[in-house]
Image (cartoon, rainbow, N blue to C red; front, side):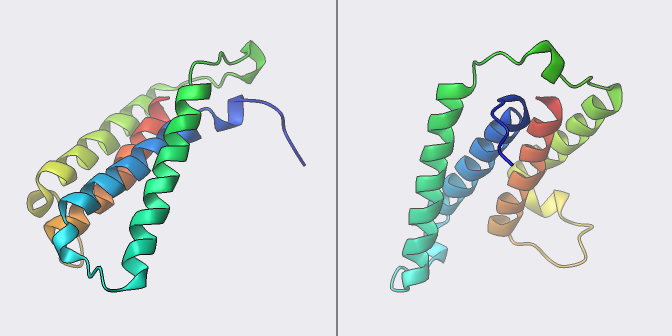
Length: 129
């Protein structure tokens, strides 16, 4: 079934763009951890960079479209609170991965902590959008 409405995709594009952009930027900062002799490394950077560019293109192209009144979802205060909590934790994990991953059941190095923070930040964006 095809739905030709913008409303369902409206929160997905900012989430996708934020997630993929953060993932590729963190990967470039930690490129010394990658083995560029392996084909999988080239695929990692190539696929995530192309996905990031495509997602950002569609966000720029479609991000300003208005949502029809019947397509709006009522925003509850609990969504704003969840977005705030996820956003604070995501930014904290991005900036201070050792501190904010201390309660995880497995140890996280700085690279993986910063990669995982993209999940929380994109979740916050989706809730706040």
